Image (spheres, rainbow, N blue to C red):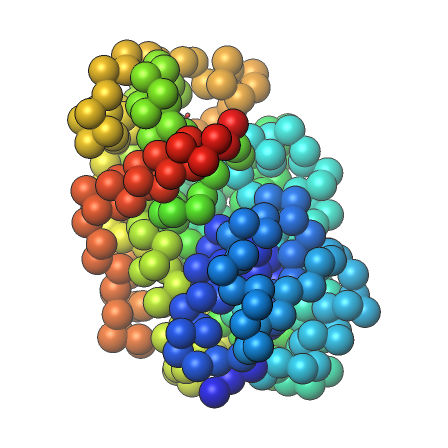
Length: 327
Ligand code: UDP
């Protein structure tokens, strides 16, 4: 049994991770400021004796240190997420991402606690290499474009974590999540799959941004948390970076068509220019595919849930939310 502290524990990935770790017999504390997370995500866990939720910010150094002290392992998921939020609130994004990671690593360094830092495929930036490997160069856009502030802040978080490992011996593991989707993810922050599912169910136009020829690989959140759980138990993972995602690639136009068909919808599929969807000068990535060889070599596991299943799960979740009257 390990004692695990999850920052962002009421978030989309955090709540699934808490559930998974509890099911394996671990003790879990979750910290969340409920900015993008929600109590709904963890309402089925809050009455358990082996789970505690604490409302608060991962920027609160004293609070973070208190929980890091109690735990053996810290999974640091708290961050500003969602392209829309990041474009609209770049100051918040940079301050939250760098500040919270600093607070976690400082506290972990005092007691040499294991830290899993959640990072993102965004750090590969505009690179057109397929697939991405962990040691590949990264290629970020200009500082005049807000989107890259997120990638850069997460890249700095990674550098900081790896620096704490090299310089202070803190056992850190970095996970780069590729487009992770599944039940409980809301479309509110711009994520494409819950958005499409909701639009299809409401028979509203499905909004494909740009040409729709850009592609992504959508990994099921259940696979992502399985990967994290395995990495926690892997001494070989310490000081290393891991891609976490699936390599089943789909264009956004094709995704729209598949979601519409799976939802039994007759929604129109419309194309919206990026400038209209986000802001003038918005830059997107054309393709983003992970190489997950390293994850599989070290943990014996690679995410394999097929896209069809992922789409069905997201549609079922959105349908339940709509039936519950969520706006
Ligand atoms: N996207 C879209 N319609 C939407 C939301 C997003 O076409 O309603 C596109 C977005 O421009 C990107 C892809 O879907 O090319 C994935 O977007 P998301 O924000 O989910 O993740 P990203 O890969 O950009 O981090």
